[in-house]
Image (tube, rainbow, N blue to C red; front, side, top):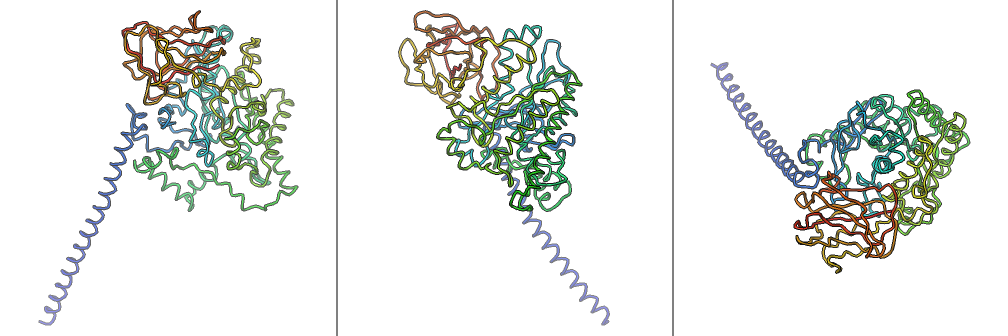
Length: 577
């Protein structure tokens, strides 16, 4: 009886324990359901916000889940490269310009087949973030009002337009159309570009390779190590190694990356703060070394720079072996540039740092880098274009931080590179209109910003956002029936060769339209006639850009549509030298 009584007591206790356990389990499950439900609701809210944002517009017709990815992905052959299918919106306050990474990890709106069409002359441009086309990095971005480089202002794109506009180049390549691939990747150095060429770019059968580097090399060589190895010292190598080894920092980066890839919440948070969190962050660890540059450390620096020059020679030899003509260039750097600082550049110089890289004077380090590379190029009989002094006499705003530059500066660099290609690769002379003018200040100017907009010979005081240099939400509307079109008075006669026009929407894009120019407002000549041209998608609204084969003098520019019964609706009308 006693045993049965004890057994019954234990049974009651057992039932009580399991009831408590079940209740506790249900309670925890309920709490977790609320937490996960709240998180799911928050993430769905973030999804709706992303979808309704300009970024959602950029992904329209594409998989919005791609917006959760990091902008870059690990690539075993060359370290890392842009994530295929990634999209971003630049200048959200200045026109919502779109940026796309195609399926081949190139910055382009269209995919590039490895098999080259017979009527295509293919150029590949390699380099770092200046080639890729990005704006200033913190803390300079705040001073520059978050200035961004949009697709049409990237160096590779400008090179493509300049080469296609040059009749001598087109004749030299048998009338083929020039296609330029933007193979620039933020943070790349010459060893990254070489490895990417060997593993990937050569498969695209380029007719010409242009490579412009230098800035990121300064970071890379500034390690006072006897066993320094250029091929394991590229940007981000340390953190990628940490992720692979799952160290504390690597685990944190891995968790951050997982959250970014699997939730819209992180994407939503990152939309107005650049490209968002991701795996690739730089950690150099200089503090682990002595603070004073000893003679031994200085010798390490020279040895490191020598390895960079060696790799450039290898890149040259590789391209020569593949029978691919090439142009190498060294980019300008803010600290080394002798130009008179503009007011904004003086503010940038105060915060952008780069006086020292590690323990080395950055200016002297870059000078040493340039000298050694040019010496190695001379010894191995290949040429390097030294662009480090190209802006020394410029009075316009050039630098947005320690190395990144403005739209106008990108045009000047691209034009200088095309001039090199024209002379050195094609052995063609430069005409007077082809030559880069010194100082190159006039290439920076959007003449429309100081212009007056005239309709029916009267100045308009509404819709003048078209003159701001970017497409905005408010445009210039002219009712149907207007035969005089829209005239820009540029105030003085200037040389023009480039045009950018953006319409209100797809419905207001005319089938046929033209641009006439005049020096006096009385005698007009046609400058551009367009019949059913394909608009581009560089901005949120349909646009069109034009590069002429030569400069033309003009004070007045007249836009008119062949069908006057159709309203005129323009968001941007810009003209440049």
